[in-house]
Length: 370
Image 1 (cartoon, rainbow, N blue to C red):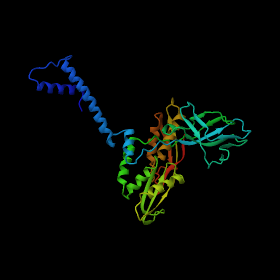
Image 2 (image 1 turned 90 degrees about the vertical axis):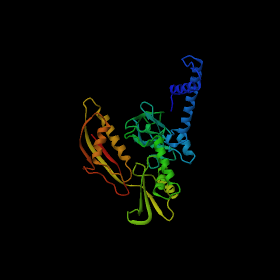
Image 3 (image 1 turned 120 degrees about the vertical axis):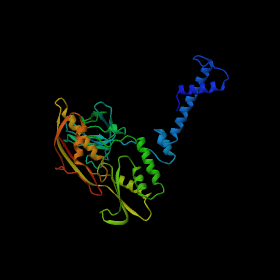
Image 4 (image 1 turned 30 degrees about the horizontal axis):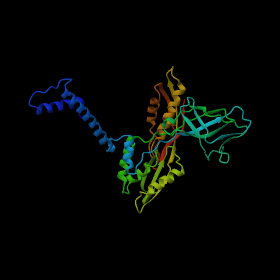
C-alpha cells in the first residue's frame, strides 16, 4: 500500500533517472503537476483493487458482500428475531365485555418501540371466532401476547416499559408489561455468518457430527443443542442411534421447531442410522438475594437490571451447560455500578452449582431480588 506522497516520490525518481539533465520538479512546475495527477489516479486505482480483493474473499468481506458470497453456495444470513412476551390490558370500570383485537398495537412510553398483539390459542381468553382476546364483564384485566413490530434486540424491553395504547381500544384504559419482553435478536453478524459458513462447508457430503450441527445451526438464531451418539433417549447404549436435544432458550421448544430440526437432520444423517429429536429436561434455577446500593442510586432500577441480567444469562446457557453458583455474584455486580454489596445469595436454596443431565438444560425459575 502506498500513499500519495510515496507515489509522487517514486514517479519523480523514475523520471529523473531516465533524463539526461536535471528536471524541474518544484512545486507548481508542469512536470510535477503531471506526476501528481498520475499519482492521484494511481491512488484511486489502488483503492479499487483493494476493494475488489476484499469483496472476493469471505474473510475480508463485510455486510452485503458476505451475503452475495454466501448466496453463490445457497447459504443465507439468519434473519433478525422479534422479541415477544405478555402485556396486561386493564380498565377502571369492568362492567361490560370488551374485545382486544389481534393486530392492535401498543408501545413504550417514549413511543420508540411498538408491539403487535398476536393470536395465542393457549390463552383461555383468546377467541378465534372473534379474532381477539375477550375481556369478560366484571373482569378488570387480561393478559395478551405481543411481538415486536420490528425484529431485533431493540424489542427486548424491561418490565414496565410498555404503557402506551397506539390506538384507542374500547373498554381498555391501561396497558403494562409486568415482565420483560425477551427473545429479540439482531440479524446474524458477519463474524457468526463466517463461522457458520465454515461449518456448512465442513459438513457438505459428510455424514458427520459437524454436518448435523451445521444443519441445526442453520435453522434459526438462538438455538442450543447437544448430540449424543450411540445412546437412546433414556441414556442406555444403542449402537447406530443418536439423540439431538435442542432448545430455543425457553426450556420448552414448540413442536413446530422440533419438527423443523427433525427434517434438517434427516437430510444429513448417516445412512443406516436412526435418531430422535427432543426438547431438554429442564432444571429450574430459583435465585434469591438482597442488594445494597448507593444512597443516591435508584434501588428499583438496580433490582430490575440484576433480574434481567440473571435471566438473560441463564436463558443463554447451552443444553448440558452448568450454572455456576459463583458466576451469579459476578453477574450481579456487573449489572449495575450502583451495587455496593449483595447478601443471602442462594441458588435453589443452597450454594451448589446446578449441573443438568446429559439431555438437560438449566432455565430460570423464580428470581427474587430485594
